[in-house]
Length: 116
Image 1 (tube, rainbow, N blue to C red):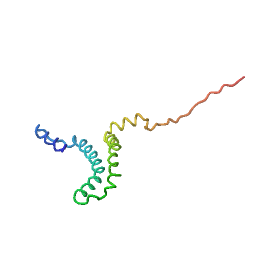
Image 2 (tube, one colour):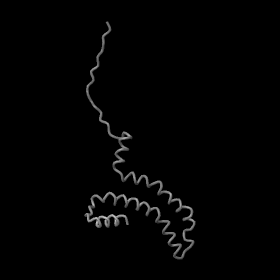
Image 3 (cartoon, rainbow, N blue to C red):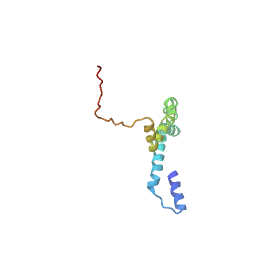
Image 4 (tube, rainbow, N blue to C red):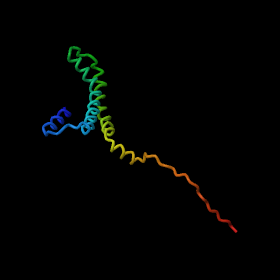
């Protein structure tokens, strides 16, 4: 719905839709909605089967496991968001000094003093 809204707003303003500019938003929206769909689909499938006529279908599994699977959204959403921000990834690498360091190879001249 968000993509449709952006396209409609561009048409109302009589601007062409440049998909190169909208690509990043579309990828972010797709990744976040995919995370939610993957996490919610087992619970929704079991709930739909229960509504359609099998009220005890995987009832124990749903109450014991599927409820806790929904909590994984909170665990994975920050990582998905960080992965979608390339500027932030570069900043984190610089902050952690993950850059390769170049070793300079050269000759070293040592001076020795003679004790007389």
